[in-house]
Image (cartoon, rainbow, N blue to C red; front, side, top):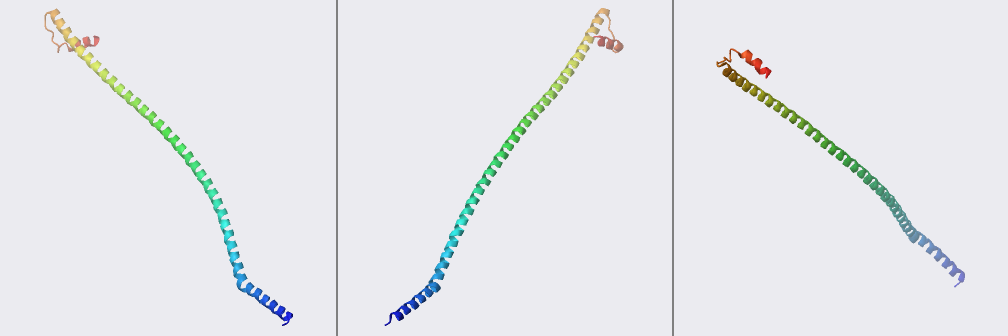
Length: 156
């Protein structure tokens, strides 16, 4: 056999093998490699996106925590202010109630003093009438001399 024919047959077999590998094996393998490359790129992009989302979530959590602390501080300050206002209102109410009770007590004392004065005046008038009876040795008609007795009582 001739080397040329043999070489020519080998070249044809090699070309057929290249065509077969290119057609049957190369396209699916390259497609599989491209798909894998795309999945890896998508995974890396998702990882980067996740990393950015995590950083954003951390920032948002810090901001939310800071806002919550600030709001809690404001609420505590308002509660303390309201508590002091309530205490002051209670003190003022107690003072008002104390003043009212003091005024009522003073009024009651004044009434009792006036009642005691009136009772004392009546007793003094009775003693005066009794003394005048003894002095005059006669009986004085209290009803007849009522004006005189009232004038005497007002002078005492």
